Image (cartoon, rainbow, N blue to C red; front, side):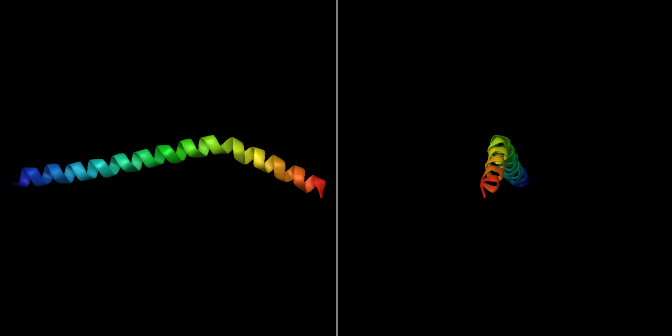
Length: 52
């Protein structure tokens, strides 16, 4: 019984760690992709300010 409980707890912890790692990678990739769009939006903002 104890071995099964330990393996189930270990499986839950492993799944939580996997989810956290996946989320961290997704956020890092999302920021890396949207970093260029942020730069272009800043450039467009400066252009719109120059217009006014």
